[in-house]
Image (cartoon, rainbow, N blue to C red):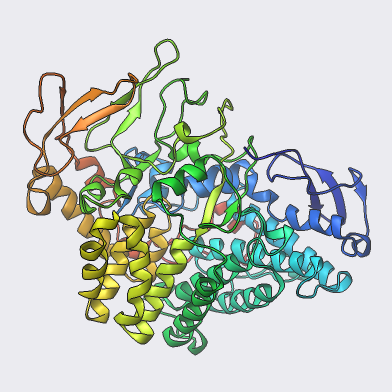
Amino acid sequence: MKNLIKICTIFFMTCLMISCEEDFLDEDFLDAPAKSTLDESTIFSTVGLAKGAVDGILEPMGQTNSYRGRFIPFYGFNTDVEYHYRAGNEGSDADLLYYDAKPGNSRMNTDNNAWAMMYQGIERANIVIRGLRTFGNPEPGTEFGQLLGAALTYRAVYYADLMKTWGDVPARFEPITSETLYLPKTSRDTIYKRLIADLGEASTLVAWPNESPATSTVERINKAFVKGFRARLALVASGHQQYPDGVRRSNDPDLSVQNMYQLALDESRSVINSGSASLEPSFEGFWKKFNQENVNAGGESLWEIPFADGRGRVLFSFAVPHNSVDQFTGQPRGGDAGPTPTVYYDYDESDMRRDVTCVPYQWGAAVDGIAQQELTGIDTWYFGKYRYEWMNRYVTSTNDDGVNWIYMRYAEILLTAAEAANELEGPAAAAPYLKEIRRRAFPSDQHSEKVDAYVDALGSKEEMFNAIVEEYKYEFTGEMDRKMDLIRWNLLSEKLDEEKEELTNLQNRTGDYANVPTTLYFRYDEDGYTIDIYGLERGETSNPGPEYSAFPWDQPLDEIINTIYKPGVNPDDRQFWPIWQVFIDASNGQLVNDYGY
């Protein structure tokens, strides 16, 4: 379990004030007198103080209406593989999820929402970056260099999330002055180029995972993450996305596919060749380590948003749900979203990622403190990557579980290399990276068929690209990156419409789903609470015996079909959320909404 304590962080207003704020990050980030005004020259020439200021850049993520309770729980839905169950209920939450958000959305239209908290983090980063450059002498291999690299990266994280959510946004790369208090939106092309340059600098300043004490944990910035994040932004910047004049690629020659895919390939290969990170041997083992809050660097997780025990709602929102206090958790929550009902049946039956990712049960009401797993129906699946039952801690908080949010893992590096290599060098160059992903996914005795033969048969760039799109699905369902990827591939509307057709086929047991059973059979293992299911696999239609109970597996899917996006809406016209009205009204006429809002 992480050793989480209160931290003190920089409170940036008209002066720099050291003040203890709410639990968010772990470790003793700052040893300084509380509520004492300090001069920038003192803060940024003293490693301990500067370190606290850098850590303070992330503190806004832990606020309720920021990443913690609004951005992570709601952004990224709905896709062809992920469905948020509140989309079935008309109202402000549904609007966010099924591509019909409005500027006055009651869930989001507050002055302390994620938009404001992201800019608060950016302002803190701007002050830190200026201070470190002026007073810290940040050079590669030094503590001040590591801190500057982290500050540049944190600022890039905020901007990347702003742009994937709102498109063009105001650009601030210096602390606010009276002259820059109100700014119009800046072309995201300009911002992407700045972030890519900043991350290039940051990669020269920060150490590889475990190369220094500062990079021994995935809660700290390291070179593998910076390079991987730079590669991700290169793919996004050159990809399709909605501009005010339509969905297209950037017209900026600096952001061409050739330039950006080469950068992505170079950076991802640099991480791969460094040997500083790797896939965990077992997909299930990786997710167990994540839920156990193992934050040691050098494995698969490259960087995580670090939440303290009293902050963060990852399991609270997405875990396999528990309906009462039971043997695994004192927080009866989870289950706000899950895989679409087709995903389980799209996996190869031998793919070991399937049963980790897609869970067809919840935990029922406890009797004498012990709950059982209960089947939920083909219309209701949960993300098995997030499980209270895999934690080492027993969560008792009302609202927060404290589990980190994985921002990037090494599997993305491999698929980035595969995608970029396929585009620039052809499918043979992409094959080794795709094989490495699939090699972990299948038992060793099936590698010749499911890995080597499968990948080697992808003889064209188009075939390889389509396989990579599918592999992203099998690897990342439940991590809410799919929406961003579908947008950059120009596949958002196409894949959502395909999913509506597939859901209809599953409901009617036609097409690819003709042999999916309509009845499941279950019993309990010797422990009395783990469910043993027969009938999930295609073609398992016989009754396995009297010790099993029958359960109907033919629930209607109309609600999901009709709310994966709102009827009458074109998702490609709603790739972004609108800027909330409170920020439009406070912008002195500088901000406007595009895209028909």
